[in-house]
Length: 466
Ligand SMILES: CC(=O)SCCNC(=O)CCNC(=O)[C@H](O)C(C)(C)COP(=O)(O)OP(=O)(O)OC[C@H]1O[C@@H](n2cnc3c(N)ncnc32)[C@H](O)[C@@H]1OP(=O)(O)O
Image (cartoon, rainbow, N blue to C red; front, side, top):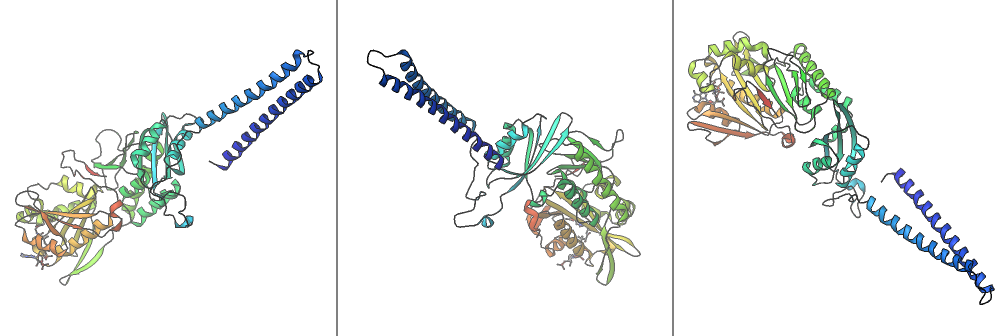
């Protein structure tokens, strides 16, 4: 209850008390007058008026009592919203003998829900969330074509689930509710958060997909070629399409609340910024020396398509087969790896001989798959081991929890390369194949975005990331 609520409740109680007192006093006056009149009248001279006054006073008292009782009952019914829930002793109240500072911060959640734009909808939502022990910290109302999307950041007691939150939103008349855990940094207002994300893009500490997730919450992202017909960028409440910085289109979907026009505008602005960063800020080049050879290592993008194709042409057929198994490597599949922004490709170059090794990292679910190939005339010099270590570092920077690798069982060289980078054999994916895995040291991995990839293998030509 707020301070203002408390004040008005007190005034109401005062008014009720004063009413009681006035009626009781009036009844007492009637009663006294009646008794006095009776007393002073001789027996046999009883007048009707005396009895009428006494009866009237009795009726007044009884009537007032009945009214007071009814009022009390209706007040109890009106206040029937369940009291806030505090679970496991970790609610907002301080423990006995402890100060408020001793209490661990309650979990923070972001709740998005589509609502009809009617008066009182927020009050109903707030009441339902209060019943769960929710403490609303921020509310943003995003207008949509036929209503609004209410976006709330709220603390709830430990143990309250996403389902309970979305059900509460549904009971308040909401539709398509979605609830995800939020980071305390998200308590920033939207402009501040957008600027922070833009800074991450410019400084290269985040990819566009990570930035979009920071703005839109848990989304599924898929990459596809630009549509031949129709606009590359588009908005519906179910899906957004924005230009991918490396070419093609990113298709964004979100379970739960509808996308809003403001979110579309923000996403487009971020995509434009990411594209500008790509053209203005050259990829960082790392200089490494392997077995006395000075080499350069950097991320590749769509401008590297031709040299990457040339690198593949200069690798022998057995080397390509060891890398890609039976999957053909055509220009389109290599282009997708370089452009989608959902895979990371590292290239190793010499000054005079172009690309001598390529490593790929496909981001999927909360893990990544790594693969690499070294040109035949540069193998057995330590380049594969060095590239493998850099790919693992890339995976850690993408906050994935584990990295896996699929090899042909007879490929002892890649087996030694992976072992040297702390991979362990975890099983056989198919007969004649080995599956390797290692965990990353990224501490944030457990709460990190989920990544998925269909990598075009489903025939859709799309690459996806959750
Ligand atoms: C998950 C996947 O990527 S599966 C596909 C892997 N790719 C391929 O097989 C394509 C063809 N091969 C290659 O491209 C490379 O040889 C790679 C990537 C496998 C290894 O890269 P290289 O630069 O040749 O390996 P590097 O010189 O770093 O040596 C790595 C390990 O293999 C050993 N090794 C290298 N060549 C040989 C060889 N011919 N025979 C036996 N061991 C070898 C090295 O001694 C080293 O092991 P160690 O660390 O225990 O000493």
